[in-house]
Length: 143
Image 1: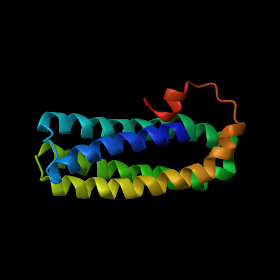
Image 2: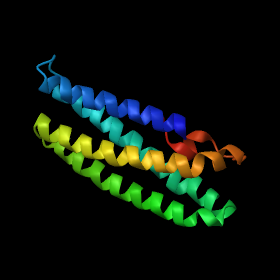
Image 3: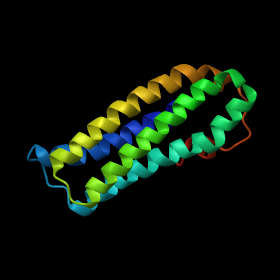
C-alpha cells in the first residue's frame, strides 16, 4: 500500500510539474501531453481506489470486522476524491486555464495526502500480518 501511495504521489508530481512549468514561463507543455499526464494520474488514482474498494476492503472487513467503520470512512474518501478527479478531468478536457488546473490539483493533493496518511496509520500494521492470495495489482491498482 505504501509503495502504491508513493507512486501515486510521483504521478501527481508529474502532472503538477506540467502545469507549474507552464505558469512559471518554463518550456510549454503541449496540450496533448498535459492531457496525457493528467489523465494518467486520474486513471491511476481511480484504479488504486477501485482495487481497494472491490478487493482489499471486503477482505479486510471479513477478517477484521472491527475495521468496518474505518473502511466506510475510507470508501467515503474515495467517493469524494473521485468527484474531485472528475471535475479536474473536465477542466483539463475543456482547456481550463493553467491556474484553474493548478487549483484543482492542489485540492486533490490535499485530500489525497490526508487520506493516504490516515489509511496507512489505520491499515499498514494489519496488512503486514495478512496473507492475501490476491495479486497486489488487484488490491492496489495498476501502479
